[in-house]
Amino acid sequence: MPPCGGSGSGTEPRKPADRVNRQFQAPRPNALWVADFTYVATWQGFVYVAFVLDTFARRIVGWRVSRTAHAGFVLDALEQALHDRRPAKGSGLIHHSDRGSQYVAIRYTERLTEAGVEPSVGRLTRGSSPSGAMVSSVM
Image (tube, rainbow, N blue to C red; front, side, top):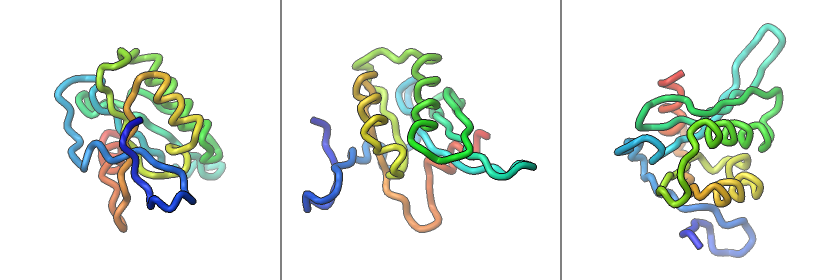
């Protein structure tokens, strides 16, 4: 079982450890993906946009738009990235995100495991999301 964080109280779900430690550089493609989502104002209201970014290429490899910020729409962005990039199982690909409920949802973490991708989640500090900043800088 991969290292996990958590309070140890047994009352909260265990979350994957931060394997990135704010070092968002990768030595090759499909070594480190960063995922995040944001909202965008449109003429008909707000929509949410989820992204998966390959940090080596600084390229969005999966994305999805939704009217609600549910776990399924971030999972769809991950599925697109997995389909388009086809990372080899056991290649050491790390998927990093914040600790948002969409990214630590059971379905999402199970899909990462099934694809052979190592999950990593980082803590957000007030007003700071380095993974979000990296995704935003590419947009």
